[in-house]
Length: 257
Image (cartoon, rainbow, N blue to C red; front, top):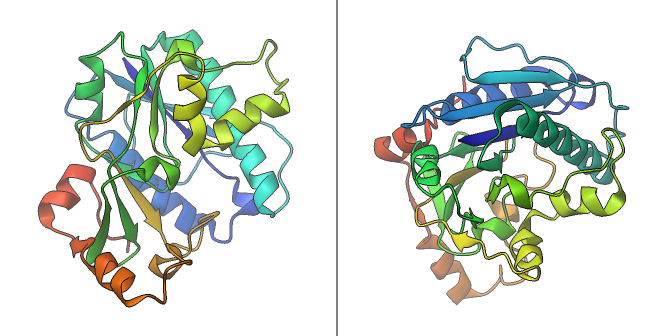
């Protein structure tokens, strides 16, 4: 079984709780569109989101962690604590083979659970290929390698490789850092002798420019160093493609109202 962990920010630190809930609902619908029904979803939150969608495989875990300040560092610590809490719950409740952490505004391929469940003994995978979607755009950006360095919805890990605290609610800094540094998980585990393969399909859509991202604000912020170079500009143009109905269906990526 594959369990998806979604850490959700609090309404009290959101710019717009309404937008957060709409983004989360789309993400949840995307996850629950899996072609293989052997999956579960654990949503870790301060307060339950106001959405219309429900699914029997979705479990809400409400926490009373101290609310973070509005700076990036504190928001990330809050997010990682929720991830760890969700992992503890998932391991005890479902005995999964693998887990995947999904940011609450991203979308994923509907074929992930089917693929992962065919390889229960694998150490796991990183999403090497993925899309970047700016809200309301008719185009989508394709990153064909090292997508996991950009997007937090990128690691599928064997549950036995997920470090957990000795005591619940006692989360050391190094443990928090492991889950914060999503782009380094592959290297960290390889240094311990555990090889994460590249997922052989486009696994995730990194949603940006929605007003609630911790990092990316829009397509214009994807690159900085080479932005002024003409060759770089044309190479970047080739990475954009139309947002087709097949891509929308694959990731359940619909436009928000």
